[in-house]
Image (cartoon, rainbow, N blue to C red):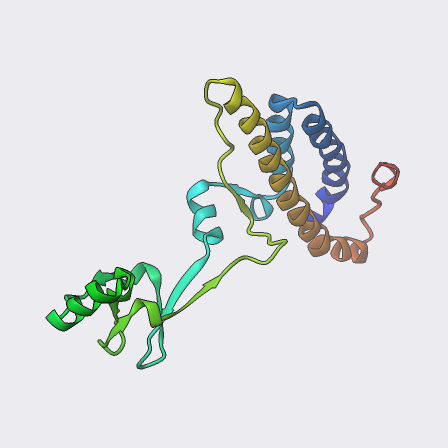
Length: 200
């Protein structure tokens, strides 16, 4: 039962968390990988952090939408095709005369009302993740290439990845504790020693 596992998981969690922080400080990347995966494996399957760049990108990539100037409905950018509208001879003459940008000619068609919108006059909105934001998923770890410059970038990227992974694990562990702590107390089978955690 998950609540019966909580004391053991909690004790191991504190140990692994300290090792992860130490591994980052010492740039001990094999230890970082090992402890992160071990800590993730401690949790029941429904609380584990998924490691997948594809899933992470689906959740983390900002959503961009275009608002139609006619029906005021919003359409996701991925569903829109921006194209150049053919100018009339008078428009071409004016563009050449005043040196106007070709950006004025970018248009798109609203899928809801089928009207043609000028991109320059379109309200574009973007939703971004709040900070902090816990997705339950992290991208695949960065891969190291050859060269000194890449080594420095790789180490920084791996440090950021490790800290992000640890943050996700902290949140999952908090959920696991919240979901099972009270249940265990009611059944009288929890006696968690948090002295290690409090002293670290």
